[in-house]
Length: 416
Image 1 (cartoon, rainbow, N blue to C red):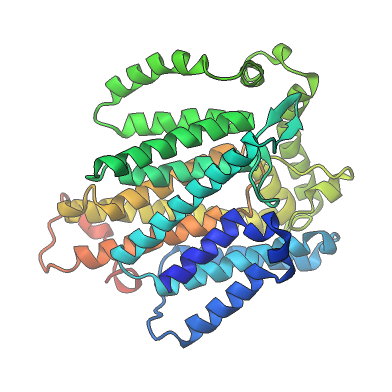
Image 2 (cartoon, rainbow, N blue to C red; image 1 turned 90 degrees about the horizontal axis):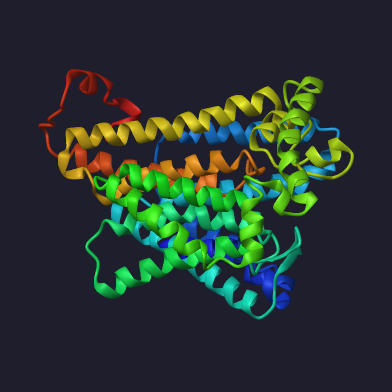
């Protein structure tokens, strides 16, 4: 089952049926999912994992469906709803099929490898002349068509970096360490070539988080400060000007500043749509239609309240709270069982937390509310927590650092 799940992740991220049209004519993704569902239904090893994220995702899915059903732009959101439900189905398959740290490690590794090949293929195509000319520069795009936009492609890479970081703290062979360094270098090159300002700033945020979490934070910060001006000299001049518009709009074209200003307009328009339809908003992916000129929000928070209203804001908040509570419980488990601290499950939970921070940060410049990453990363964290619970409760005499931690430890549904 794990290999089937990994195969679907490859289809969803790399999307070969959008690269080679012959695969699209046979509806490869749909056929694969149907066959996987049939196998899963007959597979005796399925077992549902309880986690506080499950009801949060269920409530959010219900909100999307209700908002879509009552939306005045019903037809506009149909594809978005269908795609989100596909992600939800995959979440169910993962949560009922992956139950151990070993299984999680395999699935997690497959995700990182798939994104790596996706980047590499996209870079080869860029070198062969495939790009998008926008904001007066040639910008690298993904090889697919659904998530190939430069900003979206850069975001996909950025969200995967914490996942690759999970392996950095392991004892690796030289060739494995080399591949991991190559992954980070490839990510840096691809994000720069997309010309995505949000992706570029996100790289800085990710680097800052890693530095602050390290016991050698002072040395790392100094090394980054020394390496930054050297690396800047290798950035093409046009890309340098593109990134410089973050602090000096005059060095770039006028539409670069207009693009930046549209993010604030996304929030203001989202508030306006919420005032019109406060409960369920204008409907999934209906932001552009409600505006009247087709431009999407480019702002996660304006998108949330504008498209899904108060119900969307509350249920999305439930998801964020679920991520936080899972991370907190993992920390308490590591206090109870020091041998878990620094282990694979804790590193996965921390990586998911970093990716959620990046999702929220890039949300100020992008409408990523329906992105598959929210559910996929939630599944990774939930399974990591489940595996840590099994290990923590294996011994009958847990040792807690303080009584407050002991009082908080879960019971009933969340205790294993």
